[in-house]
Image: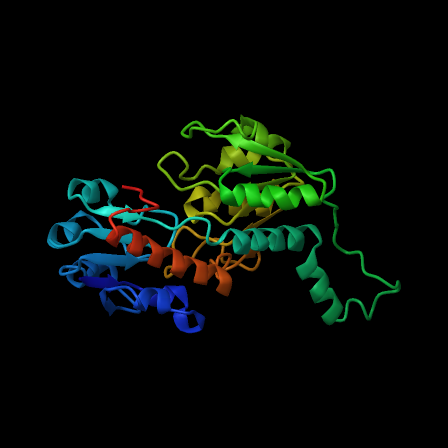
Length: 319
């Protein structure tokens, strides 16, 4: 059976144990990098395809006559034309839960950096400001405690719940937003999205990108938020209107923001947020998930997806 792995380098495989992949009864063809224009040619003779970020659209699926199974090294499935895959009886599986610990850790690193002004005070300690101070400490930037503050979470999957768990250790109030396009479990009480924005000191996004959540945060939504609030996005860049966020930070409509994602990645054409003059903005290059342990769990889970498919019992199936 022929298998193709596309953009394998996006997993950073050099420090991973790959035996779960190589022990499978598959003749693998591995491509460390892949241009979108090459996908159709590379998967044409494959029975199984493993991908991370290379898009697979209907024209490529039409040419892949032997293709029976696709597994994604990710949770989101928007890079695959699922309708076209279903129409050709191609099973698609994703990976879930592998990055929860790593992403939650990163979310709190961003929150704490903003609320403690860590970057600014690190700079003050090394640029001469502390040496020139007439006091034993520097108090140029406002610091706030998390205790008693309200954290609004948009998306109550594993990531949202993981962030909420840490918030409770800080004795924060946690509220979950109700979104119109989602069916919600009764486990967490939901309140309307607009109320979450208006009442939260910190808003953290953990929802998938869909046609209804595209730019779910724009000018109107940012205007509802407190001037002292901060926005965290470790989900998808397109959830946030980047022009609106830039304006909100520059005009002081919100106090700060941190994002691990942008609307285009990598930002080959630049990005309006990649501007050091924007105040109280932290940008990290989509690294929330990259802890070695997280990537190993991801690799092992996808290998397990393939093993389950070969056994006739597909798991993590999205179509």
